[in-house]
Length: 309
Image 1 (spheres, rainbow, N blue to C red):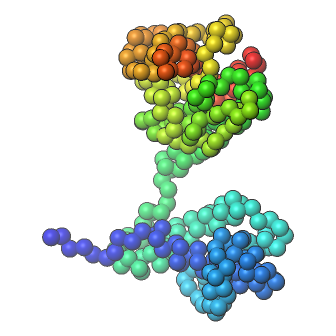
Image 2: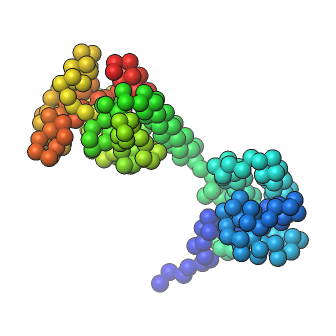
Image 3: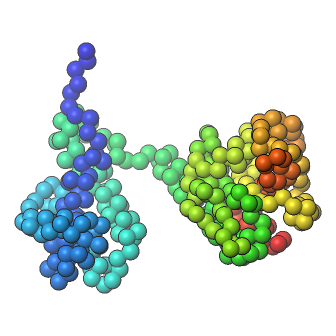
């Protein structure tokens, strides 16, 4: 049996006790000194009042490799100043704290704590916590995709009943694929779809990757067969709607494709796939007729829909 040297404790497991708890404790003590009551501090820090009470009972002189850093004190001062001035948006706080945590993890005090706690023989130039350029590029690209997808969907929703009229009974899905896709997990869509409420579109949840499985399958197939389309939206299929779209977009018709998309898509040649801009499925028993409108990106699709309806 192989000998196991050291502990396989990830640095993420050290962050709560070595960074987040000391930070909350320091903030609680500073806010209490400013006159904030415990229930207010609890709401700001996202903890219970008894937890705040325990923070205030711990001596403020307690030191650690993290809390003794100048950067830690500057972070506490910055956050307390923002709270004091009424700037208490949790999302902004999370962004600031997560960025500082990243600094502490990459060749910083949390890195030192991790080395000592695990007793593993990390090399001096250990870069486990440094995101590689390739990974950073993927993250940036995915953030751009979800942001663009959400903004395009919001523009459609802002037209009110104009877009609401186009939403299928089962809801509208809107997806976009990253450039270097490898699987349907590289396609962003809306969990729960975009639904119609009182005649208008409503986003149930912001876009995420790995959503919109049916549309993801279609885009994935088209990309693998030479299409340069990266976005796809599902709309109601009526003669009126299809007539408007097919005046400018190359459309093909299918029936009951939702029963077997592989079979339906394989009926098209590679040349046809490179030209197709719209699939109008007639539906069937228990299947709603749907129009699938392609585009190079979500913005292009949104602009087309808004200008034509």
